[in-house]
Length: 431
Image: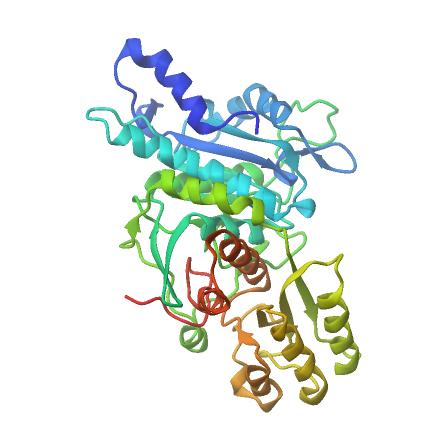
């Protein structure tokens, strides 16, 4: 990571000390505008060339100052932030989101926590409020949903006691993830010289800035994309080309309300970002150390799926830590007599097993049909309304927490069953 909002703001504070206390909002255009932290991770929004590949952090920042700031400043109505006054974190090397790993989630979560820690530290000093009003993560769309869910989980403080887990606090600093379906800079230019004509990047950036500028402390994090504000742990990519490429895994319906509690409200206690950063530093080495094996039910029959489970769980090179099965419909899986013993063998090895669905909306309720009801007896748990992306992220975070904090299997299972950050696990957190 070349720079972060924490260090950038310290430098700014030193420079502005001679001019008096800094302001949390930057004045411009006759109105107060929110000062934001921008975390550049890579992805289409920062891509250039043919075929597209993300610019490095320094190259993107140079093009931003030279090209994007004057172009975005000329748009109407005025943006909610001063584009020239963003505090930048540049993730280096930049991430092609197709290649994003749990280690990258840790880097992104730490960048968000660094911005929150700076704001908390300076907000506590009388008369000084020069921390950021919010943080926006610029990310590629391929794995944006996984990263957003992981950041939401990694920035939520949890408590574990007597085999029960509950969310305790989350960041007061509002944050959001965005990206674009077209590059911000016209890819026809060898060196960025203009914005993409009729591209969606500027619109998504402006909408994200507006969300953060108006968000109260403790506002649940979001994915802001294509004119929609989505829960950070519930976003899912639905289209490979449309501007409105993202939706939510469990849009409110009577059935999804039954499957999943409402996202945590703004009344949740404010977490100490320094404590969360310390916890993240302890668990980061464990993120991705064991794999989450994701297998989808298909027309090949239960025997082949059972054989895949046995082979992958037993392979030392896979280092399996958890099993995620994408079933049909509300979580139906074929062949209880064949697949059930394979799931039971995975559980006997200590692996958590979650059953999700390949269907994008509605969630998982295996007990609804005989074709899914048997999975609980085999040892598999329902993913509730979690999307596949959120379930993948949560399984990785759960494995890392268990390794770092010495959780037993009962506590790990309780974490998976508890809605931590609005991801849609089937169990509501205790009040």
